[in-house]
Image 1 (cartoon, protein in one colour):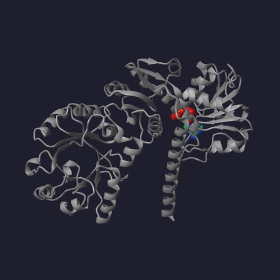
Image 2 (cartoon, rainbow, N blue to C red):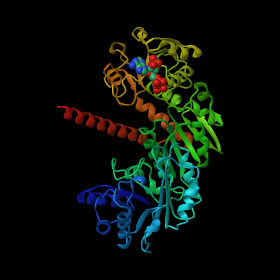
Image 3 (spheres, rainbow, N blue to C red):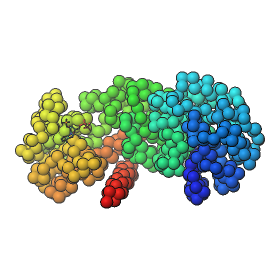
Image 4 (spheres, protein in one colour):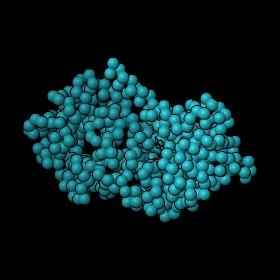
Length: 505
Ligand code: ATR
């Protein structure tokens, strides 16, 4: 079940929220500590859904500042009025007269951590024989979620258990897989009643929460930060379109080796890996495919027969996108063979591309602001290098930007002078934020063939999907999702920028 906490003050807001909640949730929670002065009886009469009545003190993360006896009297009123649920904290539970019509949730909250002895905490609550046990902790590390999964697996009573905070999101979504009684979701951003709460919209349209069962396979992206990753959007949609019983999560990870080893207990079937973990993740794997080993970075992990295998789709996807722009292979011959390619940048993205391009037989030159880094990458590959000033003198067939120049918010910058762009040249842009960078706009105007960061992102994700599922990826759908999500974000950014501007004038 999904429970939406109601925290809006006015009667009008509350009525609006209740209508909205009836669409997206199974239960509402009236947070009496937020709804200053509202009477449980009246609230109950307003609610189209079964309701939980809760009134939290400051020490439990709430806003109640009145007397304890008044607080308990409010909760008692909810029980006496026949509320479906009342939630009372473990130390206050004895003060409530229970009635059969109302299920009593007895709760424990920890805003600091997920304690080692969380099983003890559970036992203490369960001894009071509530109808539902609620144990909520705070995830300081993503591995803390595992303790809550274990708690749910061994639960003797209906149980609500999850961890708060960004690192606890996984426990809020996967609670259904492990038999949790319900999860909480905010009606909208800004209406959260606790840290790390997803919105009901996210639970439904991103994670398809109601369809999660004990059998649901788990996938996800490992990164730090991970909050703005497009991968959950693209992969959840693709897995669903393929009719697979699977969910894909963002994993905010600090220590990737410990995480991958620990989450083998879930288990997780496939990972995408992003910054800063693409190198370190290799230590946690049973096998790394030769290209990924050569590049020294893994962005894809699949579990096969209990073994974790790592590969790198960044490289294959970039080469694939370039080959596409050049008309594809002719027999065994790569259209990149013998072409003069200038690669701008010497970071992780440049590295993945450089290996792929050399394998195709391209004549490669790596140029970077810090020429020494270009040299470090180029020397072992036996290709040329230099500083960015050499860009003016090069007459290349393919030009690739892997630097962050042109990325939001510096959207009007380009590392490539217009004079360097000629008709028929292929220009590859790694940046996808914004979707159309200044470099891509200039390149189109100059009559170049272009490959965008979106093309690359979609292709690396499609190859991941194929590695995990052995099925052709729904590339059209994946592309639509990326474009839609980025368009929404770009619109949101210009709205915020617009409101800032109008505020200043
Ligand atoms: P990634 O792993 O995504 O490739 P990265 O490792 O941070 O990212 O690399 C960023 C690249 O963008 C580097 O090549 C960087 O050049 P330096 O090695 O000289 O730092 C390049 N870069 C970033 N900002 C730049 C700027 N303003 N002008 C030129 N190059 C820039």
